[in-house]
Each structure stands twice: as C-alpha cells, then as structure tokens.
Image 1 (cartoon, helix red, strand yellow):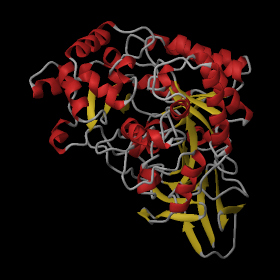
Image 2 (cartoon, rainbow, N blue to C red; image 1 turned 45 degrees about the vertical axis):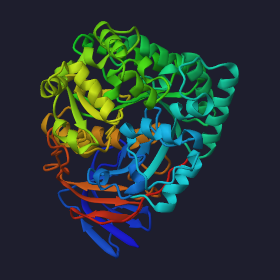
Image 3 (spheres, rainbow, N blue to C red; image 1 turned 60 degrees about the vertical axis):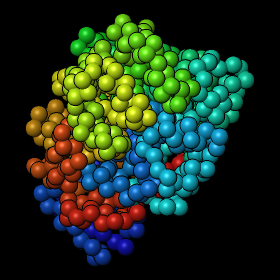
Length: 526
C-alpha cells in the first residue's frame, strides 16, 4: 500500500530546520521525501500541519494491560508509536512459576493484574512472544527488571548477594538479554531491588554492557540524599561500562531543590569522564507510584503477604510512624518531602473505597476518624497494597530546566488505573502545547528531537525516530496551534487535542482524528 502525505511542515527529528514537503510511504517504510508527484492508494493533506516522527515513550507501565487490551489507544492518541516496558525493576519477566502468586501481588500496583493472562511464560523471550502472538497496537520494547532477576536468583529476602548469587543473576541477565531485552531496569526504592548493594548492580551491568544495552535506574534517592545516590549510579556506569539512563529524573521536596544545579554538574562531570549518561522525565510537578512506598523498606521484606502481616501489629505501626517522622538514612521518605496533604489517593480496587479516590492523606484520616498514618495503613491493608498515589514534589521552573538539558528525553511514566496521573494521557501534547507554543521553553525542532531521535539513539532502536528514507513509517501529524493535553489531576482520563493522524509501520491508526482498531505495532528486540 502507498500513502502520500502532502504539503506538511516536516520536522524530521534530527534538529534540522523544518521544511515544507511531501512524504511517500510504501508498505511499512518511508520511500521518498521531497516534492512528490506520484499516485498513491491514500493521500493525506497535511497543509498547515506538522509532520513528525512517531513519539517514543521511554518509560511506560503497560506491561500487563498490553496482554489484555493490546490496542493501547491511550498512548496512540498522544502520538506515541513506541513504548518501553519493564521499568523500575519490577515487571512481568523473568518469573519463575513458584513465585507467580506472590509476584502478581507485588507487581499489581505498577502494571496491573489479570486472570486473563497465562502467567506460566517464565522468560522475557516467552513474554515478548506472547505479545507478538496476540498483536500490539504500537511498537513495544522491554527492559529486563532487576527485581525479577533477583527474585529468580535469591527470592524476596533482604540479604546481600553471595558470589554464587551474583553468578546466578549474571546468567539470568545474559539469558534475558539474549531473549530480546533492550537493557536492564531497577527501582532502588522498591523491594526486592532496594536490598541490592552497589557491587551487585555493577556485576549485573557488566553483562548488560556486553550487549551495549541501557541501564535505566530509579535511583535510591530523588530527595535528601540525591547527590550521594547519583554518585553511586555514576560509579556503576564507570566500573561496568554500561550506558546509564536515569528514570524520571527530578529533585523532590522544597528542602532539596537546592541540589538541582549540583546534580546537573555531576552529569557534566560524568560525560567528561566518558561515561554515557542520559535521563527521561515527564512534564508535571507531581509524580505517581504505589502508595506503599511511604512504608520503610523493612516493611516490604518477604513480599506483600509479609507486609500485610506487619501492618496487623500495633508495635510495627508505631515503629513505621517513628521511621517516617524521624527518617532512615538513605531512604526516600515521601511523607517528608511531599507532606501528608500533598499525597493523594488515585486508585483503589474495592468498590467500598472508591469514594476515597482524590483525597489526600489528611483528608483520609478525617473521613476515617483516625490519625492519617493509621488511616493510610488501614487502607493499604484493606487493598492488599495494590493502591496508587500522586505526590506533588517540584516547581514549574525545574520542569523547564530539566526539559532543556541535553541528556533529556520525554516519557510518560504512565501507570494505568481507574484514576491515573494525567501524564498517562497527555505528556507529549503537553510539551508541544505548553512548553513549545505557549512558553517557548523549547523550539519545535528541539522538542521533537527529544521525543523521537534522542530516545531512539539512547535505546539503540534501529530505523525509527527520524523521518528518513528507508526508515519505518512511524509518523504523527498535528496542528501546532491546537495541540494540548486536557487531563487534570481530578479528571485525568481525557484525550489530548490537535493530533490528526498517527501512522504506525505504514498503517493509519488515527485518521483525521478518528481511531482505527489496528494492531499495527512490532516487538522490538535487542
């Protein structure tokens, strides 16, 4: 099939000056760029529109939902044609059969859960094959999660890895990289990743470096000890040779905003050393994760069932409150940097708790007639620790500083739920509408580069991320005067406006604003 796109402003993803032109697509590739006078099966008039490469979301949490609803309209509606799963060290594979039930409970808050899935796949290769067999709406890549690797090698215990444990983890990592993973992820505030020391991460990353893969890391601290945390990450890159990619890079809490420039300086010094370093971020001053992160690391040891048992004890609850109020060295204390009044419940599973969605933890306590701590512990217990939150951590001026950094590319970090963070629906249009058109914090070509070629290069994604002859035809056509995100923290489930066409592998999936249910995506393997 031939598609001819006419008369659009081509922003090719490579920071070149935009130009008016045509694009001829044949089958799944871009055949010709220029002024084209040829017949085609379909002609798209892109006059007064921008033609861009498809956007690449380097941090996504569609890992489970993609097997239940493979179309992924939410992402496609904001121009995303490729997303990268397996984030924060906790995802689908590898998954030994004996841990399926435990891991489903742990993974649910991040990536959802479903009885419709055959959970006996065990490896990354089999997980990717499941997606391929079912079909995918957009292109999917995967990072093998450190937590899953540790689960298979050690279990959920809080213990230092022995030399034999390390060898086992390296074997698993090598198997999963050969199975198609693009790299490794970890989340060092989440169990069981939090139990790893620096040496463990260096040894595993040496294997990832053999494949020239990426190491995406939710570092140990994005708050009080962010400088020490960044130094650890840079050390991992230095001693393993792996490419470092900081996930959702930020500095949390007003007491820690003073560290932002020092953090940037560490990035500069690392690059001068020859360490490969990059990061992604979403354009909002609030983050989102599992509500369970407000609990100290010791509460999570052994998995969800052990966590719930600990919450049954009055003595444990008193210890948790003491740890939250006094802090634990090296632990990111969300209550400390955001405040009980700036942490909001965004999803629950039980109907009786639906009225609590949208309330902060102070309000939760008022509703329950208890102090906010015990009201929160009760809710976590009742929901089996499968509950999400939004926390406000930063300033708009920091968003702009981060967007302008040369290491930066855009992401959503979108976590599907009943009441998700608005970034799930609007990150990419928000940058183009708010930060390009309205605030002029970035030029159009800078923003498109950070959404397309930059992430493709970071992740070694071949033949995507640019409008270039011979490349896959992943293309977005939008109206720069109208494009905008619409979702809010109160009503996040709103599609953006201004995106007229999305083409994935030569298939028109959004056609003049209308969504076509087409499974046009591919599985991207290393």
